Image 1 (spheres, helix red, strand yellow):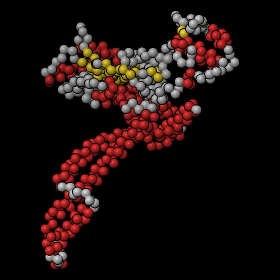
Image 2 (cartoon, helix red, strand yellow; image 1 turned 180 degrees about the vertical axis):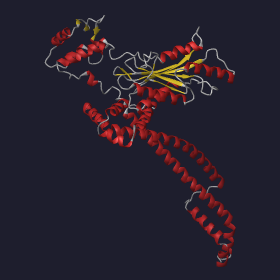
Image 3 (tube, helix red, strand yellow; image 1 turned 90 degrees about the horizontal axis):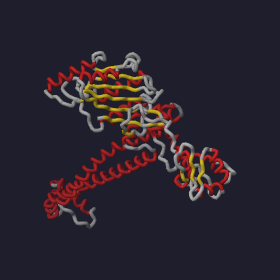
Image 4 (cartoon, helix red, strand yellow; image 1 turned 135 degrees about the vertical axis):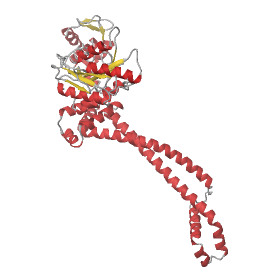
Length: 479
């Protein structure tokens, strides 16, 4: 199983991870397969003569033999053998160029392996510095240290590796992927910012640039398009082609704002020119909160950062960023709306539970009065027949007081028919069942509310002023 999480931000590689199952190759022994993988990882030319290599519960000089021996012991202990066994696992972890030192990269790789394997498997961490992006090769034994178990790859294992890696990177002030996507390409071979711009996009940009100039007519527009290197095809549909294009592109295919009629209207000032890049801001997705947070943390300055830094630390913000990613709350409006919804739901549940508890207390009280009334009715009848004798009252004070309290409670019902004890017991049972269900939701939503409000508080403390500025800008653009 291979799990790769990759992303491009500004054409550079951000901290990425890949989990690879290493099987025995056809025609090769397990020893040879292990040697090939481990020797590549430990290559002295890539690790500065072994300076950037670390290991856990194994020696880098004898690691191949140790891994092989553990497998033999496992077979002897369990009696189990597999034809297509996973002999080891490899985690590849790469970092943004120029952001991390080899020493720190190795330290992060070691901690990643330790947390992911929970310290139950021996591993090596080799940090390669031969590429523009520093990266780790982490190889861990599929057999446990006590030789009684094998590591079982599980659904979502790649995601688990990424989460641990992201948290470690954030704790160390490094960049992470804001919108991870699964892929099959090698971790160091994503296309960077040199990817050629689409011909249609380039044509729109040229048109935008020419239309932004004042005092031009349509002939000037066509002339400047020619000067920009475009051939013009006039007729029913106006079209343009530069030297790199194979076919002409019709204006009407460029989308709203780029038909010949719309361009003429702009030139004749019948329609105001709005730069397309500015006009589309409203329709674009809100700025990714993770990008904002990382930029703020890496800037390390400003009143927002200083205020936040006095209270929180990178570990707490790492937890917040993981929470935002897992719950797809990567824009502030979504976070704000979710926080309000959860808070409202929590308050409604609280009211529901309190109302149930209040009614249950009333039922218990009323049921007690009904039972007491029934038990003391004969005593009160005798007291009345005795002419309300003081001597009788002193002898039966407790029963008479209970009877009087019961009658007072019944009078408060105001003309309603007094329910039976059985009916009250049934109502109480229903309320108790509903209360238990509500409490289960209550505890769950309380935990969720605490998490999201904590995340929002962290964001507000760190980015409060920036978010406010963005909202002001947005209102300006909408005017």
